[in-house]
Image 1 (tube, rainbow, N blue to C red):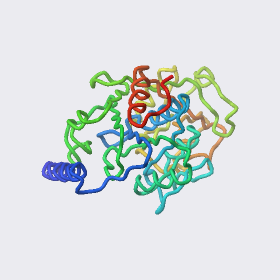
Image 2: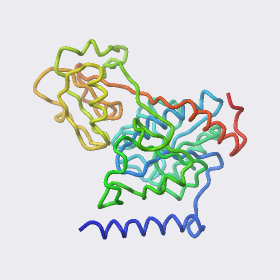
Image 3: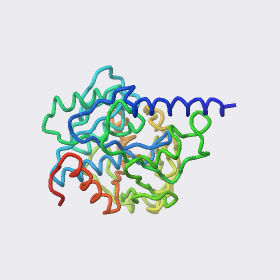
Image 4: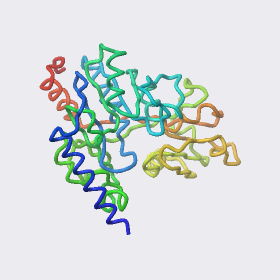
Length: 314
């Protein structure tokens, strides 16, 4: 029943992309190199950790990056800067995480082009922008496209609404790089998420290893695109889990995390930004960082230097 709708979606997607390619629709340039990190499927694939890695890597190599995002679920009508004092239900959970972790200017807006324009105006020293998601947002002209593919692959291979894809798999042939997150099924630069410490939500100075939580049942909470990936990573540290999967970008309320006991509750950083206002001593955050094939960093610096004559490659 959904297949005809999927064909229609594909036709509209193709025509829209052609309209931008033929300049029938205008794409706005930012005045500095723009790197888009996105994916083909609905749901998280590791884009945000990759954006963080790119921002940190560029800073180490002499760039001054800024980050733009739509901000899933953000309640903003005009471009807005995201700070550590922002509310996740207003600016989105992923932009909040990016602002807390990156130390870079982060702006959100319903149209990423508007966010980029506002960021550049407020921070004229920024000399490269990274778009968190936005592979399909062709109104913002990009210099580099990076597509992330994770272990879930492409599902049934069909476009929305019959399948999980926003664009056909063939779109990977036109991007500048593919990052393969925890999968060897797709050729690309390898990426994995690494982490082995837990941070108490109420006191970030209290950091423990997995041994502190072993020997007891732990409530594992995940409102991300692939909760099972988070659960497997925690289990590999030797913890016994009670799984609590939620939908991606779930708007957590205090009642969601009341499990009738005082057992530890561990969660992702993205979920934690939405739970701080009702945090309890047993809440623990599991921060992770992307680890990339070293060849990816070399490729990125080489491409940026070619685009606009960036800083010398370290």
